Amino acid sequence: MTVLVTVDILLVEDNPADVRLVREALREAGIVCRLHAAADGEEALAFLRRQGACRDAPHPQLVLLDLNLPRKSGHEVLAELKDDPDLRHIPVIVLTSSRADEDVLRSYDLHANAYISKPAEFEGFIRAVRSIESFWLITASLPR
Image 1 (cartoon, rainbow, N blue to C red):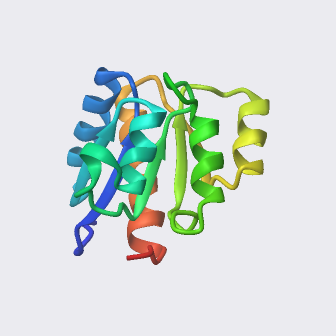
Image 2 (cartoon, helix red, strand yellow; image 1 turned 45 degrees about the horizontal axis):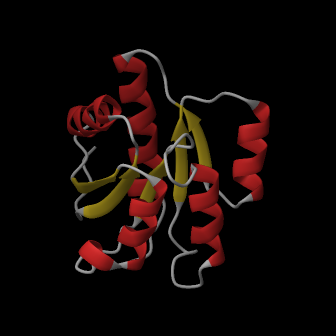
Image 3 (spheres, rainbow, N blue to C red; image 1 turned 120 degrees about the horizontal axis):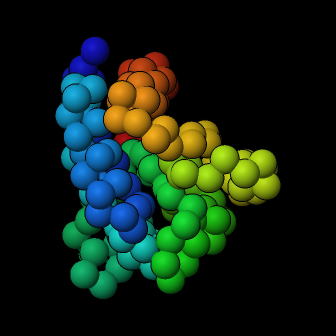
């Protein structure tokens, strides 16, 4: 399945290899989107708030958020995003290597919309991305 309307997705990920992996997984899954990447929590919030060099950034319809980030953790980004009346409507999927129960619970306490542990192998990663596509980009209605 391919999404008919192109969506903007913000990927907040500090590992360039994982950014490439997400881009490849989206392409392999046939997802039509514009993927924007932020390498740390501060950059992600500047993008979302359209501050500084990001003043012309599009409003993403979906955020994929790693937890282990420099400058501001994923939990801090999530807390600020969900506390901001202009941003809280954006669905946030935590996409991280952590499988720790406390990370899962804290993410949901901060109003994450989903929590997905990154699969170690590429095929598992493709399946995870397809599940994101199936629900978030086809079934669910995203804010515009």
